[in-house]
Image (cartoon, rainbow, N blue to C red; front, side, top):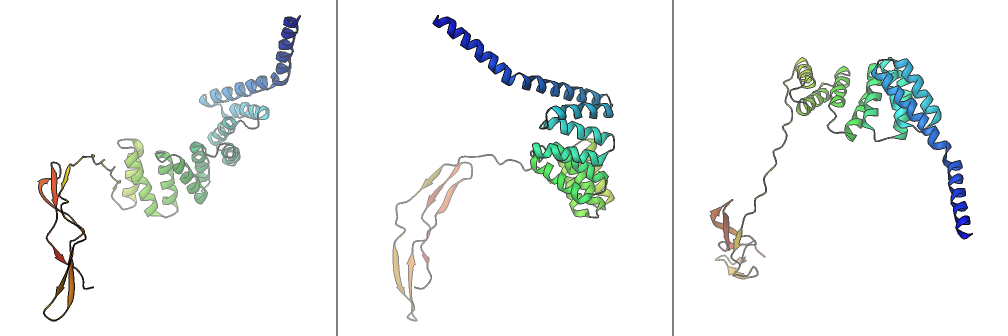
Length: 253
């Protein structure tokens, strides 16, 4: 009898859980299906159809970040830049650490010649991803088009440094030359190898020893052991031997 009641209780709990949660996985699954169809349609170049699929995914799940981004990309490819910005705004609200969303929104602003907004978005993308070559490249273009040659050249040099031997690096070098400068990317610093240098210290004397000295003109001075050590013999890699230096004069008291 107890076992039967226990089994009934388990079935009841499972049915209750299914009733409470059954709709959500189904709806979420549908949203994901629409999203995946949108991705496939973008890859096929069918941007209008992709937008429809993304819209359906968002209708089901209004917090579907990737669907907002995908729809923004589809609008961008369709050259509907205002709509792209609006969709990417939502993507960024939901995922403020998505560097790619800032880059794409910045590119939409750039094409609309809203250079200040573009520079801001590219800068945010770079902050999130310091190795984002495309954001450096197009922020350089935005600076160039605003007449800020110094900032543009700095970004182009960064592109050359990050993308050596690529088309992006060649493009950046050409832009620098057009601006009347020579490409000078910042060299990557060479790590300094850590070397353990053995030291032998001769400490058989006191740092507190002081001597009173009366000069011929009556000036009173004192001498103390300097708070330094002198190295003798050895080499940087082989090690030094350290000892007390020659006694020196201090300032008058």
